[in-house]
Amino acid sequence: MKKLKKIIIAYLPPTLWATMIFLLSSQSVLPGFEESPHDFIFKKTAHIVVYLVLYLLLKRATDITIKNKSSKKHLFIPILICLIYAVSDEFHQSLVPGRYATLRDIGYDMLGVGTAFLRKYDFI
Image 1 (cartoon, rainbow, N blue to C red):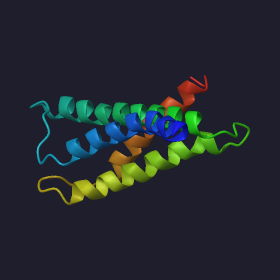
Image 2 (image 1 turned 90 degrees about the vertical axis):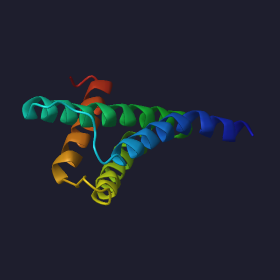
Image 3 (image 1 turned 120 degrees about the vertical axis):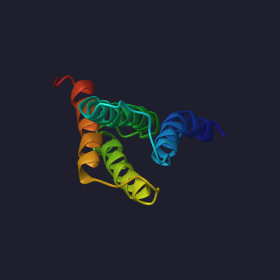
Image 4 (image 1 turned 90 degrees about the horizontal axis):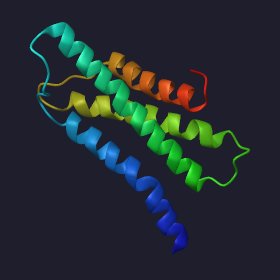
């Protein structure tokens, strides 16, 4: 029971955050600015920030649940999960009327993940 509680406490926040990403991706039209450059900057910054947070939540979860800290696994599992989720999110968007998938958005998502990783380990 104690282990289940630990897993729930660890993985509930990233699951809720991923659900929020899914719900936003399900919208045919997202709010934005009328001016194209501002809209582009706003939406791409949102990609970066949303996946930066997802990485941090997943990193926290793996830190709580993975016992062997000498393994590099706890460093790369959150990155891999974020990449898989970013790809699946773009696929999901391709199924939503009025939305389309782009590899560029996956790049912005992973830019957020990379920024969080570098900041977490004091590279920047």
